[in-house]
Image (cartoon, rainbow, N blue to C red; front, side, top):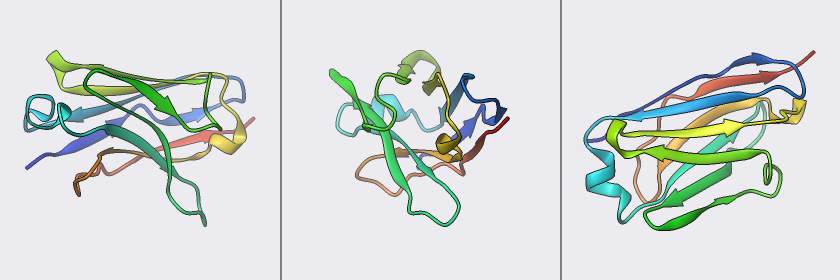
Length: 117
């Protein structure tokens, strides 16, 4: 069983930055990363959950068009943690952000990001 715990969300002004963390238990990297992408998704109030970024072992990160050039996916295998560095945040980035192991039902509980002046 894998548990994913997101953190790092908060309130930030437009143009600001945040780094989200997804800490994984259950040796996610050794057991899953070789075969499954680990992704970030987000869901704004009243909207469907959407994919934001993902990557897998040996595969360059891929990004949704809306965040390309502003968000960066990275991972620290030693700490079993995946990160999402978010730069130049916009009000439309406001959402609850989730990490997910693709192809499984492993989701975190989410962390809220609010971009507002």
